[in-house]
Length: 498
Image 1: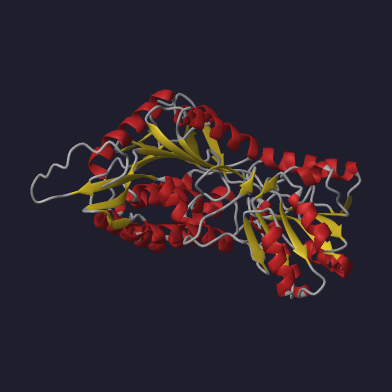
Image 2: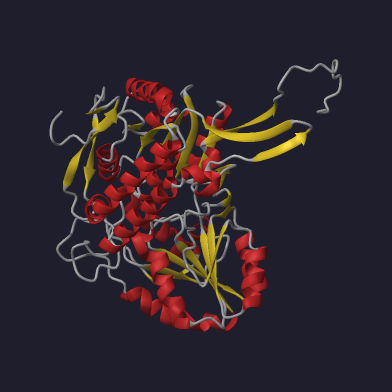
């Protein structure tokens, strides 16, 4: 294995496995090669799953307190390397430093939740449900789980998955995005340095064929996925047909409703970060702002704020956000901007052809704003996944709610208002899984779960929080009767306990 190979971790070894070809991993701001990614084969999948399955036999018997202490050591290791991990993300994905640090920190919060696995995995008990009979439930681990993660949060989303799964007593195979794998590799190294047994976590690189081999493998008990709607639906349908548990977090088109009584400055500041932060490459990004009534007059100030945003390389001062992940992503985003202009949306800020001095090869897309967008336009219907904001108008809250509720996706939404009545009605009637009130990106802290609705989620139990603990365990209910000496009362021909 040469130094330039970005390793997998299979069966206790960092290796390039049986891969016969590699993918170059590039810095999206400079196009400098960061390494070559081996593409895992069916053989690599077999080896990784077999090693994880064998490790499960001992790991499931590890006391829950020992599993919790492993997570305690791991959170300390991630915290100690917080900024170094963020720098890896900056180079591999292009985020600015503050955003990359947030990526690491939000994952760290889930490790902290995993430390409390003894409490969150407790069952229930009811004594004397019938004469001398007690009933109780036990949450037990299931086996090997797989996680397939996207490029946009290379620390946070893997950390949504494997710490909780492993803390619950399972083993795990992680397949991170092939576009920015360096942070997941480092997270794996830190997990081992924290004292994790060799095979409870496997790290497998690859492409869609690798992912498909994982989700159909008979020894995989469940699959956690984050990505687009079409891929999420495919993974859900394919894995569910194979009898697996699935949580597939898919696409979004998130709306911010702005009422006329909102704080204008707070709205505009929130809107800039929520629409263009991370170059818009967030499933919880605000990609549509709905200006209600008199708030429509704020559009010129929103335009000025958008024009003031300056993407740049993360080491340069004033970098509002970085490049998009790849040349292909840039091409797709600019093509959608062209479509939006052709459809009749008013392109008031055009980010195509954006140039950053000193970084001519970067995948730059400037801040982009369409005004007077309507719901039948492709620029509205499709998730752009770039720094592109669509502005829509609504006469009142009724119309704003109708716009959002007609959408086929329902990941996140927010309302900015000074009215408690408007906010309460909005949170009650909006058909979206995560709602912010004067909060632009309402990603829940890990005591709760990440709860997308509609085609933003395929499955039953969501990521992190209590629902994730249930996802990674199955419930066994025990009904027990103990007596000091055998007593026969004859056969009980009823289902009733007596």
